[in-house]
Length: 217
Image (cartoon, rainbow, N blue to C red; front, side):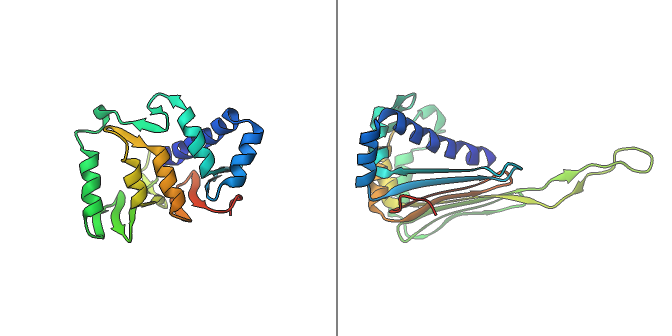
């Protein structure tokens, strides 16, 4: 979870920085004034510094900038999927199965380490993951020897993802082995205000959402 909470917001921040570099100030201002929907990313650190990072970018700006970025698997607004990393899973067939299936709980896992829930309801795909981290403390007994570990208060890392199914459809609308990020952004913008990602662990809290406001909550 910690890798997720650190890496995903970093990618979003890089995207915004790229937009600022690639578009001159007049174009940036013009794009922002015409945009109806904004993508917001907020990352709050739980360390002693208590830093908060806020990223706000118009969807229209992201749609214009992404096709100009050609780096590794991201080319012209599309992400190439490396088949070697799919473990022989046919993502298109899986998507079609989810899209045509009835609403319900697809996966529910409850254990001492993780809780996982994957469900579809009212046109949305939900992915909720809770990782349980049980910290252990070691001490010394009266003879100076190491004592058995004692469990301290358990900590949880929570990730909640909510994705409109039409956005998933748009993402897979490209050719074989590709994800159309630009098409997904268009679909996301037309969907209205939506809470997309929420992450809460012992290092950061992360929130990613889309709405019509040009300032974050």
